[in-house]
Length: 135
Image (cartoon, rainbow, N blue to C red):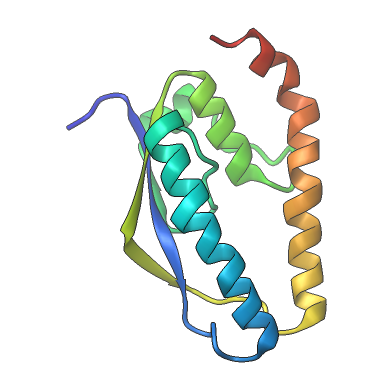
């Protein structure tokens, strides 16, 4: 019923969190991300990055924000920033859990982390001026 709502983001829950030491450590890290970062940012700042999964977007918000673009390796974060700059609001539901899997090998983890760390810098370069100009 909220016309300004662009995204409803649910929390991730991991089916393989106890597979090995690597998955247990990732579960701790990502649980903090959801329990603290996403929840607090959603409540007080009303902005958090879309996690690329476990979210539902309003089509009008996607269209109004320029659509899904493949200009970075973090398209999910890109659309979230652009939608926020267009004035759209997000809601994070910590009590709704969507099942996901964690990388179980160090090689897979390393690839994921490279994407998660290099992508935001690509996006920063593309959106920096827009963010400075935004209200």
